[in-house]
Image (tube, rainbow, N blue to C red):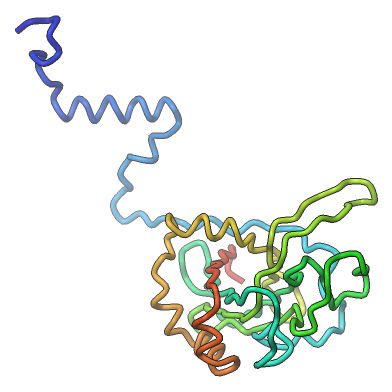
Length: 239
């Protein structure tokens, strides 16, 4: 064996190599990426983080409407059609039922038409978009709304701080009249997450009662032509 010829070196035993690799990753804080899970261990889902509800949540006493955020079944908006759908789970992956979701958003130009605090300089009106809705979670934890893609927009916060908001839809999980969680779906982040999502298979969603109700409400063609944004919500502890 020539010690200066790498091709003549004796290969490391596989077991020693794997042990050395895991030790190096552990030292770097990355060992959990390759370490096997203990037998019977179940991966826990990370609870969805809260988000600022913003100044444009519909006022108390508003009649929220249903699963269609457009003003009518055949309303035509200049915004890109979108279906926001997903599942409400606890951290063990079990569905929540018996809760409700409220959603609200800007129109395609970044304007909250329905809110009295909105000013004329913020985007253009869209009479076809109601902009908010409410739905019951079905027995398997699914929900689905028809809407349009909201626009990103600029605002001045606290009277002095300019801020650019990415396209997003606000979501509140409610039990009766109480918020359990207020969060938001940042649409571009959800799209970027799709390839690595644990929820890439939408077969259960398409068969859910929530999606069936949406098709009955707005028509199959409207659902089929819309962009699908999958936004699963993890709420823990169980409500």
